[in-house]
Length: 88
Image 1 (cartoon, helix red, strand yellow):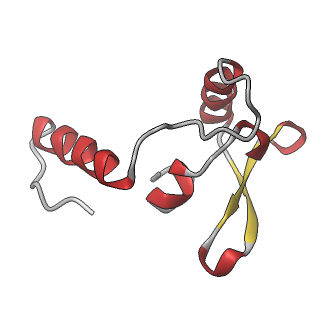
Image 2 (cartoon, rainbow, N blue to C red):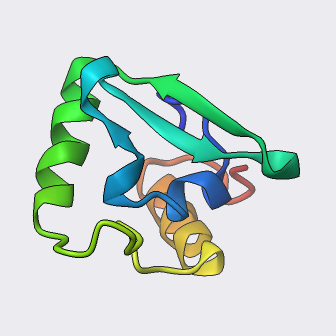
């Protein structure tokens, strides 16, 4: 989220088809239904590409969790790191 400057809903909607190898970028559908291409650091791109390799359906979401589940995970990690639970 932080590295790419993405909203949680944009991350959770990512599909393998969104990965743009020629630019080491991802294409996301943002607010208002507008598409935008986000360049990624090489190490993050490589991790996403490797993760997507295990997804045979190019239109399936990479992360099969809800927005609420993602926030629970973030809050738990924030507490473990000694951060306040009001992480946003």
